[in-house]
Image 1 (cartoon, rainbow, N blue to C red):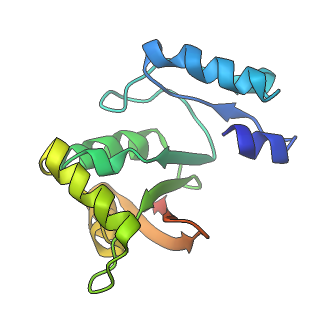
Image 2 (image 1 turned 90 degrees about the vertical axis):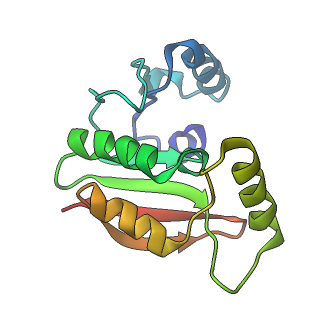
Length: 154
């Protein structure tokens, strides 16, 4: 969020995070000079979300959870979103039959540490979205290992 706010002076941000982690976010955003354009409501993604925004981001969260928990997280986002809002999921994507060592090692770690957690394919994200009233809009590849998977309410 800091990088986005630094580049776009007209934007504001809302960091919904666990209350015990918010102070770290405040310090980082203050150090980057964008704290004054941010709100910090405490929250947990397994509870209803009271914040409102046009673009929602979830970065490196869903790979930590099995499908049922991902659906709960996405449903809470969807219920707080307006019809015109967008959700950007930033994760490493697996591509069937095209192994990427960067993604594969993280995928193995997710399985080892968290059981059913894992890196997912675009089709798997599409299915999670469909089950929670969202629709896959597009996938933006980056120069690194991460992709941005965009979803919109339906």
